[in-house]
Image (cartoon, rainbow, N blue to C red):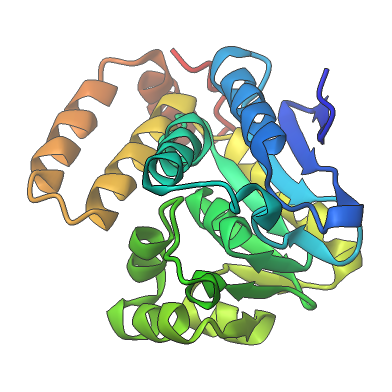
Length: 259
């Protein structure tokens, strides 16, 4: 179905692997378009409860954009590239009602770092490296990097990383809150799936609201508290909330249905 991605659906987890290891999984037009299709599957396929995005090979998650596609672009072309990427992929990942987690298995630079940051949270292998080196090309991040990096690591560190183009290793990424866990390369997918499987046992409608409300908080939306009140109340009318309360009182495991 895809030429640059490998996909697998197992135990309600949809694993999307960017498969251009000879190019360090660099993002080109085809990858962006196919990622858009894969994310649409996450939205529309009821068998998918959550997704993992990772890269093929031992070296890179995504080592950046395919710079060869930049040489012919002017201002309008550059804007169109950023708008398409953000609209088709990055914003849809961030706003997905189902969890999408990044398993970063090596270099995550430029668009690769932006792809990881668009995911709801990140795990990485101990050989991972993160960075936004666009300044070295006379550019700025175009797939949301200026906004999401600042949200995740704070203004001062984000300014430093984007102005210098320097990379951070896995240990520093953990310290900065850019990733939640660091594992060995061999354990990365297993640990990611372990966390995702736990999330999959929770109430899907509550998970959807958690994603939306946390994104509102990250953007500094002043209506966040009111939105939380609305979501809290709305969930009381769901079968899952009734099941959750009953299971707690009956000292049994809840069986959520997403209704």
